[in-house]
Length: 138
Figure 1 (cartoon, rainbow, N blue to C red):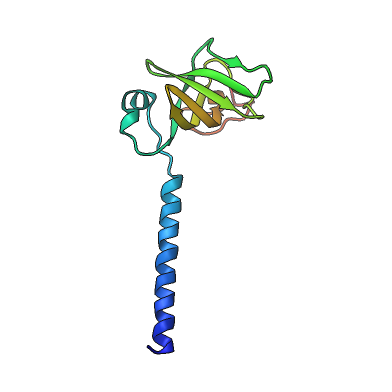
Figure 2: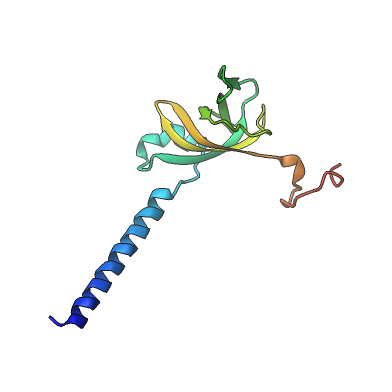
């Protein structure tokens, strides 16, 4: 086999390996956004381990650990409630009863273990989703 054919073969094999690696990486990072109800009712049907969920913090459900690094609460979406644990040194400032949140993590034995917690400030956005400065609010 000539040098040019060997070189071409190496380039093709390398290209296939890189494409496969990129494909696997993208698939492993996909985190589907699902409803709380779907997770509760169909969790055994999902093949992935990580999920993204949205809802509101159920009023009166927030409990902080003694060291304030872990917070437990109930995520409410429509009539569904899901226990959530989140551990981090940085709990969002806007996290409170009734706050609209998005959590990302894994569901194990009836509890959602979030490693990402984001809050949304609805009062700073109008109906079209445009940001309002504080003097625009009213």
